[in-house]
Length: 148
Image (cartoon, rainbow, N blue to C red; front, side, top):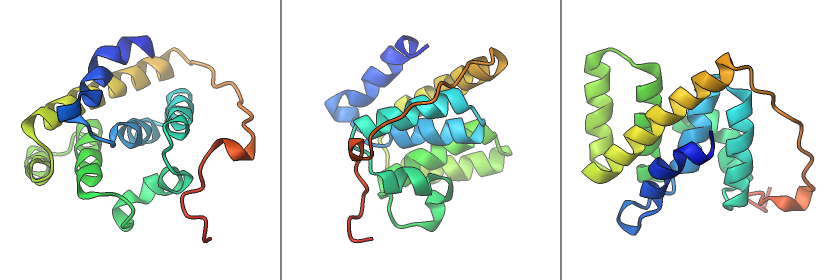
């Protein structure tokens, strides 16, 4: 399944569509869908991409922190809206808010990536994909804020 997302993910790495928010969006979608297998993969990928441990840990409460940029917050809002499918009025408000910080191309890429991730989560859950334990040495990730 990981290779199947290449087309969508490649779009987010194009210079004009660069949005650092792909990993947090994938993790958040997997959290909302309670897909342990996908969440495990996305956390590992985020750590390998130098996402801070602090960002990963506070992701369920991202709205209550100032740790995410406006663009990241817009991407997370859009991703959550596509997973939760609120009423059309709420969706319109979410889309309007995200359009303030993301280009139409970024909105499109994040929308499609979120839809694909949501589908992969559902396939993984229904297929009962196993989540093998991983043991990483403590030095294999950044802590985010070393002053704590």
